[in-house]
Image (cartoon, rainbow, N blue to C red; front, top):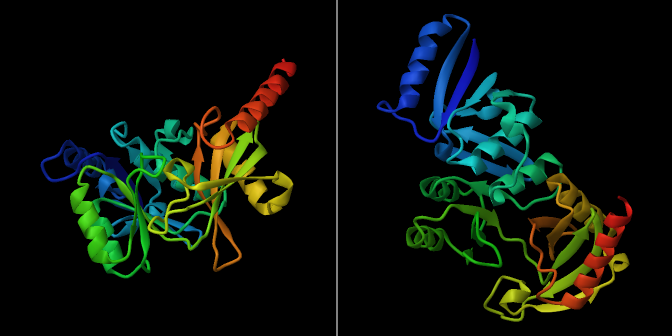
Length: 300
């Protein structure tokens, strides 16, 4: 029998969602069965390049449904958009198809977009706080892990946790934050790549100077070194350009970290406000930005 999933911001026997699901099943006959779930109850993960969005209520992966109906998704657009990206990748029909027009709402949608484009991202999990606790308690990640707010930037609400107890305490202290948890990538530096018109123009190598910190951000005191684009591995440059293009961000700052223990790299963020006139090497960035704008003006 075919299966329909109805997603909404809330669920439960007293909710409008439950009434709707019951009525749909009343008219479904033997054609299909309808199930319900709330966006906040879903478990979102990307592990070793494989994504999964799982309903623990129904014990089913979203890709196993024939149709998914998004109801009242405006309160949780980042989760609904991640679901749409996931379903589209597996050719599962969903309603409304408005959600197929990608917009970046948070780190959650950004990571699922990068995954859908087959770009390298760290092992990632997103869910409510109880789901994060359960996921780590089951031993799915090895410590240390990164716990970071899906909406913050410049290193805010970005924590390195060495144990389950530390993660649990951070979740308790930040009850109103929506966190992504990731396996920590051992590194000594990362790259901020300024991509203009989908072309890498400037590469800044960022190295942390505080031995107690895990962040390389120059806004937090990291050391900045200007690197020639030609001196950076071609695969890293190509992935930075592809990431910016997948977001349709003609002006982007792509952060890429190199694993110091493995011969690989991961995309951490694709920033839409990459500090062109401020921060490290502002003069060089502004010159490149001006050159890019001249190119754009000549095209019209």
